Length: 337
Image (tube, rainbow, N blue to C red):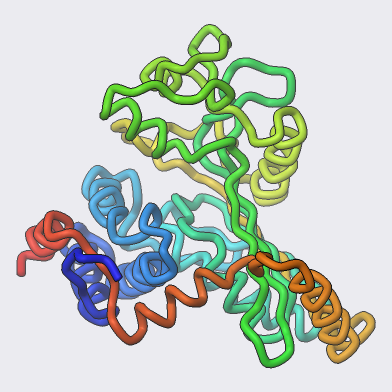
């Protein structure tokens, strides 16, 4: 266990809510955002956790995010629904999308919930895990501001465009996959720039489209997709699913989260939910899942995707989360407590 000071999940949520409320978020937006950030912190995704409170507060104060926005259903037909986030923080819209996807999948067998005019979506594993805990197969996608070139290109046009998926199991935690499509997280390049050390070749291009090991040149250039052209093609698929279907903004139309901007990013997200009962049947699906898991665990050293996060969540539930004193002080100052 870390030697850093710890906060209970309730304490962490209360601090985050108070800080977001002070920055202009209405109560429900502040609560749903804080819950998502604390959940990410609990599962070891600190990059999408409490460290994001200051960034979100800045968006609210600058008018880049509307703290009074209430998401609404803008279009619907059967298993398809479009939710307009109203340029608010993403989490109320994602909550509505998750709720609608679950409800419609139960009726239609499959549901696709798109979100438009939204913001930074955080850890996409969170909504799909909850849907899988309800017995549904779930996938989630989001686009993000430009960071990577398209296949064969040099200019950054696509976001890192995370993909998450979760699959229910019988009497066990779901299998959860969550990954961004860049070779490495942008945050690692930012840390290297701050520390003045080079980055490995293959992470990024400079502004002229040349491979670089200089982190500052990389930040001014483009990140590379994992798996080269194949990863870039998958990022393109996510971009189209999240943007073209819902009328959101492409990555190249949105300003970086890490630079001042008066513009709302208008990003898009999507959640796909499938009820196994509409196909081979719930029990047949679970039987097949357990056969796959048994085969996977037949090799020594195999760890099921998502299992480490499950362990961390269990620890956080009983012992809280490690939060540096500096971050705690920052949150308390923002929350005026």
